[in-house]
Length: 88
Image (tube, rainbow, N blue to C red):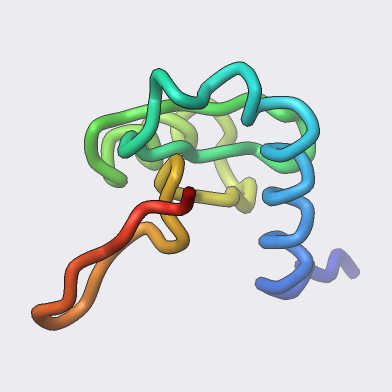
């Protein structure tokens, strides 16, 4: 039986791959864009919205779990009327 990793494990792996392999490559040029990452292969897609790279990755890797983030921000989306502030 194949068990899925829990969401925190996926987030930890995704953050680790981003910090170790992608941050220096993508920042600062891609700040504000959305990244969807295959945590097993390190392959990723970028987009100006969250949906486009998610759909592309689902087509490329059906049935795979992904880590998604907004480059340079602590969260992908904001809720309510508050402003989403960038990580510095």
